[in-house]
Image (tube, rainbow, N blue to C red; front, side, top):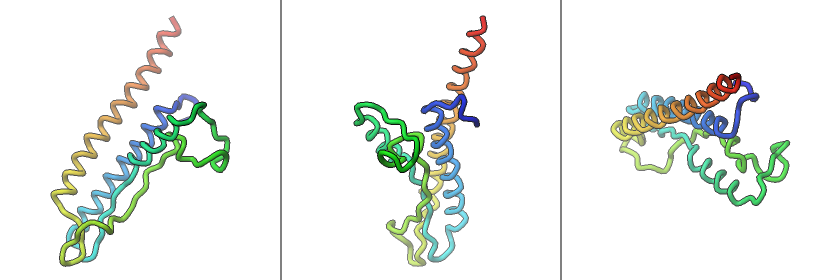
Amino acid sequence: MGRLFEDQVVSVVRRALDAGSMRHQAISHNLANANTPGYKRLEVRFEDDLRRALADRGRQPVPLVLTHPRHLGTPSADPGGVAPRVLRDTASAERADGNNVTLEAEMIRLAENQLWYDALARQISRRFLQWQSVIFEGRR
């Protein structure tokens, strides 16, 4: 998508959709390796990083526009710049074979992720419908 019509809401929702897609892939990978000895499950981190970026942005008296990622702070200060990260879970309890995947927990995560992804898709669809309304109603 070009940057011409991209605002901060669309940028954040686009990143969140990316996180949902990555999370689906990670969960699928976990399920495929549920019986692999020594396998450590994958997880995607995004929401906590986004919350921190939004909180940091709210503390700024005047929103700053970064022209370069190394200027005036970190890219995480911009909610649209928060990117999902795939991490390996080495801290959770593991079975005797060293694997820490629980089928039931992964299936719950998969269902939650699907609901979250669908809600985000509806949100971005509403945003595009707003733009469509402005474009077509503005011509009258």
